[in-house]
Length: 119
Image (cartoon, rainbow, N blue to C red; front, side, top):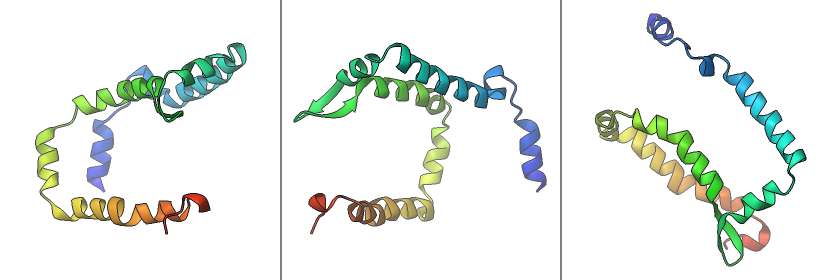
C-alpha cells in the first residue's frame, strides 16, 4: 500500500492541461457540437478525405493524422529496453495472443449480421 501512496506522491498533475483535463474534454465536445451547427458541410468534406476501396471508406486521413498526434508523445517516452524485457515473459504475451487471435475473432463473428456470418 505504501508503494501506491509513494507513487501518487511522486506523480503530481502539475500542468494546467493535466489538472483540468475533464474540463478540456467537455469543452471539446461542446466545440464539436457547435462546429457541426455552424459548418454542417464540414463533416462531408472531412469524410471525403478518406481512402476508399470499392466505394467504401477504409481509412479516414483526418482521423489517422489526429491519432498519430495523440499517440506520438506516448510513443517517444517508451523505454524499449523495458518492452523487450516484458516480451520475454511468456504469460502476458501468450495470454494476449490467445485472446486476440483465438477468442476475439469468434466473438466478433457471432455478432456479425447473418448475411456476413462465416459458416
